[in-house]
Image 1 (cartoon, helix red, strand yellow):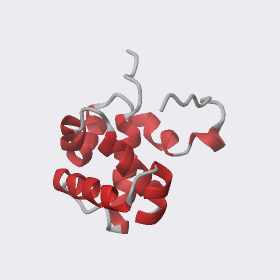
Image 2 (cartoon, helix red, strand yellow):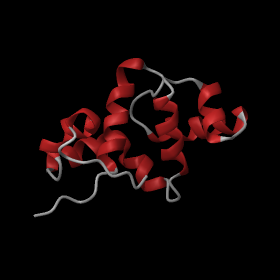
Image 3 (tube, rainbow, N blue to C red):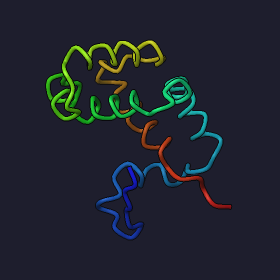
Length: 114
């Protein structure tokens, strides 16, 4: 989303701090592709990714996600059905939410230099 985070501000780096060592490696690319690759390839406008990002940020709450996105809950339900069809894991499973969230964050990192 165009957010800039200072690399010397460790408290605010969040998950990027964990991903930094893997940034630009085939291992991280494979991780992203395995979890959200199909979603990225099919979601040309980024609408489904935005929806999944919000859904994960709001802990799977459909009401809060719909309110945040400014959409009707039926629209959210439709988008979530599309998202589930493209993911190899269930975004409603609390054990997989962190993995999906990390994969989304990693997919939005700028290309590594060098």
